[in-house]
Amino acid sequence: MDAKWIDKVQKHASGIELDTATANDITEYIETKMYLYELGGFTDSELWLLFKDDFEEFTDDNFRRARADIRSKLRSYLLRGGVWVATHSSKKGHHISDVLFDVVNREDDHEWTDAELVETLKIHKPMFSAILEDRLNPTKTGLALTAEDTNQASQQASAQVPAAQQTDSFGQTATL
Image 1 (cartoon, rainbow, N blue to C red):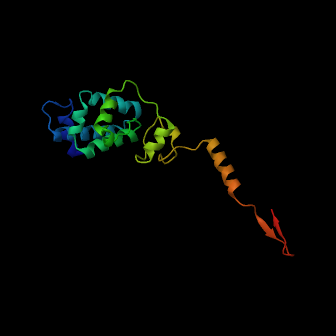
Image 2: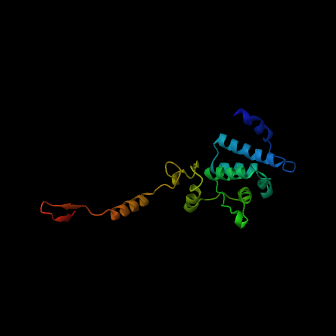
Image 3: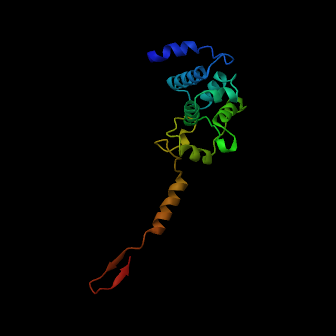
């Protein structure tokens, strides 16, 4: 473990006292938990369950008190780790703190749709999800192509290639 994290890990081993915590304390707690998740290599359901356990006492207001960049990093980390977190829109009044709170209170693990994966991979890549690995390309930056996708792409490419033409010694053009 990196020496700079030892004190923080020990400080937050039993959670955080939210009634007396400052915004900096909450930010440090979130950063420490992300460090531990990464150190442990947690992904997918295991990451989701740890997150729920570590943040079960949090309200959307508690999340809101953390620095905005850290809330955003937490959302991105969860998404890249295979934990689905809804999109947010400050304009519509649904902030990152709200969607993080929703993940904590979700009853069941989320089944990702291809559309959700595509949307997520536009911004949050590569993904390091073990469960979603079969649905991702080798670089984990997009969806894997199925045999059907490959056949369709090949057919489309063939249809777009103009027929080859050859001119004979008399100047006549023939399509091959």
